Length: 262
Image 1 (cartoon, one colour):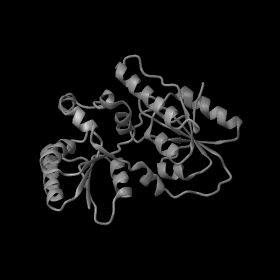
Image 2: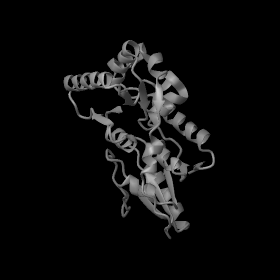
Image 3: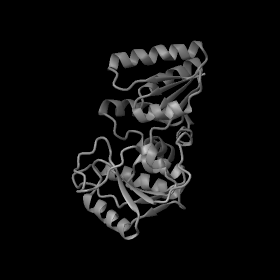
Image 4: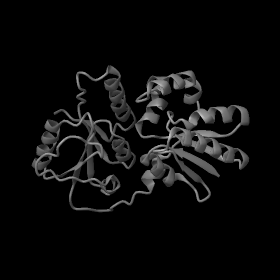
């Protein structure tokens, strides 16, 4: 029996793909601070009395602070589940990226308990999620999916990739990010269902450092990495984090990753 604590739609999808019939998924998405803390506390009490294992998605999840307390004083089993690339970056680089994309107050708290958080046992859910994706066994058309990523997508690169695929008679489709703020290139087809895109065996995925690339590689798809173009006014740590993601992909999936020279 296990309790999953999640804070995003993607984390919930990972948990739902991994949970057993008697497991419980506690969704903290869009929950007020007081209600969130109450919800976490009550479910930790339930976990303690019913002997449940607690699985918390993401090292930055506020439920981890409760986890440290209950693990130390009540000897509960606590595991950390993925949240896309961030959790894997903590696996690979430790404290270097633990505070990525955190508010200042949360970063201060994480720094106090950083070593304890990083040392928590991990629960790997990406494979469970990918195993639930319905695969299309054969298809006549080869596809290239360009993965949109806010703050990184460069329309000139999109156009170059599109032209390159047209020459090779490969169907080009855009996977638009839900928070995207750039205009879609004229007459550019969009393909917004990620799981359907992953279903195609003869598909190549092009992007920067999106979690979608990790899912594609887990399913043994080909991935082409684009050169990172970080805005000049962006903090240096952003470029470092994104570059480390690309290094991770090249290191762990050398046979399926190619860096494009545009």
